[in-house]
Image (cartoon, rainbow, N blue to C red; front, side, top):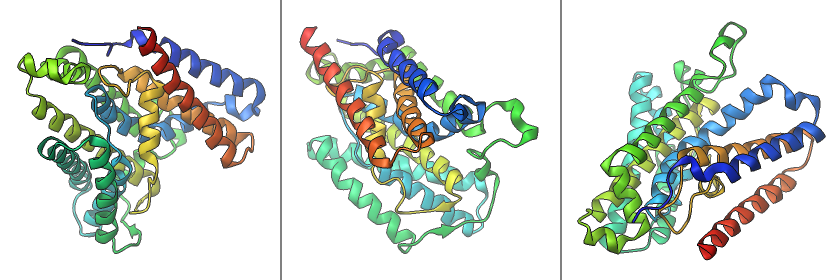
Length: 317
């Protein structure tokens, strides 16, 4: 009933990451080989990688969530608004995560109660959540007072280089370990794989399918909310227009990393590798002075190849 959710299927994406990195090392400027570039890549990967970990659960369960980018924007607005109101930074960050969790739970309830396909439901909530974010922010950016939240993804100062990467990157690593442990060692993880592999079979085996689907969407929303906190750290403002199209990068990270849009397959390591591949491509192209349209074409080509390989694997299995 279960398919592959373990690291064994990440050899292809890992080779792809190595190939892309070596390519830019050979043809890119010397600055690409510096530790500062590696730190920058890690920081840029954190936002997409955090949301992609939640999306991994949704895709393994056979679903899709197009509202992730809007949830990130809503989270930045919630965090900034509460900081302006005088709330402690930790409370504001937790509220941002909670707002994402509520949005995800709403997606799950709409999908399970209305029996509407996830693509349509989350396409609608993409616009709905974005509208809520703009309404709360009165269609403008919210300038928030500086707190320790802005240090989550800030470049390391000379005296703090011993931590190697900013705190937000370490948070991503901790979250990755937690999601990996959930999939590998818990009943919930086994049920998520079962639902994605065959919803009908899972029902016959007594798996509470609707509850599992609501749970994965709530977890995905919470992950997007945390990504919103990271986005706020990077921008230091609440911006209801930020992260437009981010959901495509998030889904692409999962697919490039070996996740199957048919459900039942995916891995945490593969997702992080997929996010890194896109970041390395963009960073390398930017350092070479290539225009944005070239970066978009290369990234789009990688996504098409990844989906084609996924289809080929299923056709040959």
